[in-house]
Image (cartoon, rainbow, N blue to C red; front, side, top):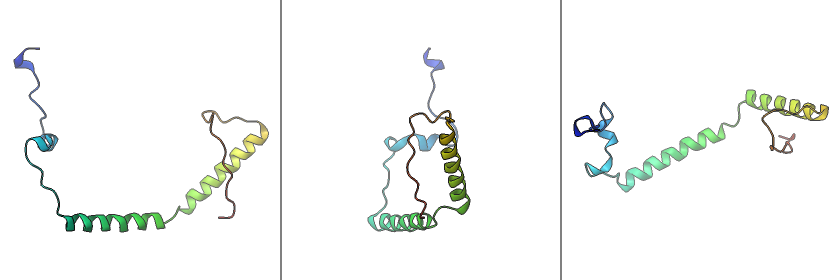
Length: 93
């Protein structure tokens, strides 16, 4: 490839952001802003965690576990699950 055909670098709307910090010095957030963002992220994360698992997923998991137990009892081997060990399910929750 001669010099005239060499790529000249990134093009398009994202070209400036792809250059990284080498072309210009990055400004960092001050400590107060970092703490505020961290607190907001933590609150959002906690809200999502506290939502729990939707009932439809719980029902699906139970159905799949039941089918797996029935298949194991009848000697049917589910293809693609080699090496996966069954874990005892907690029926109390």
